[in-house]
Image (tube, rainbow, N blue to C red):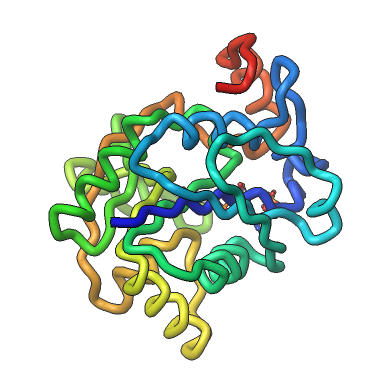
Length: 222
Ligand SMILES: Nc1ccn([C@@H]2O[C@H](COP(=O)(O)OP(=O)(O)OP(=O)(O)O)[C@@H](O)[C@H]2O)c(=O)n1
Ligand SMILES: C[C@](O)(CO)[C@H](O)COP(=O)(O)O
């Protein structure tokens, strides 16, 4: 079974104030951390790296595995769709945000195993540990049952043909989601969870860089 990884690094970093995927963490750009991890996962045979169109030619990458560079779109969903359409043949695709540099090899492997075992998709997720409430106009209106709540991360792994189908239907129906699993759920595909980690947080604002710098290890690629 051919497994392709899609690494998303085409964001604008509006909340950070700069393109966070290129910020250096102990000498390496943020996106290179995920590339290093994906390179260690034997089950993955090629990588589609999605970059801002204006940066495609200048960005230097280090990878043992074959990397295809693809231009991103205006929104994350459009970037994923561009990547999926650029894939010539794959059975399984693993989609990962480069803004999550501390995803582990295990998260990639667990997702791939779940899809190989028959699920249409598997998403890295962390069971809610805090109490979660619904608030409207600053008034607390409901306390949610946290036994049913998961904080969703990437990598997210899917049957390639099915996730491409979900994205094509979403374009047709003008549906937008904050992750790819949302589109799978919407079109009736089965999605399960594999275990995430608090360390697999998404770098979003400058504050997140403090933690990222603490977690980053001095290392050379691979
Ligand atoms: N058009 C886009 C938007 C986002 N991403 C990627 O999707 C991931 C999650 O997005 P987010 O954290 O929202 O990143 P940005 O879009 O860069 O941030 P912001 O929303 O603050 O502009 C990141 O790895 C980002 O590079 C992408 O490839 N293409
Ligand atoms: C896909 C994702 O990482 C799951 O948590 C997240 O939704 C992407 O974040 P964004 O800021 O909405 O692009």
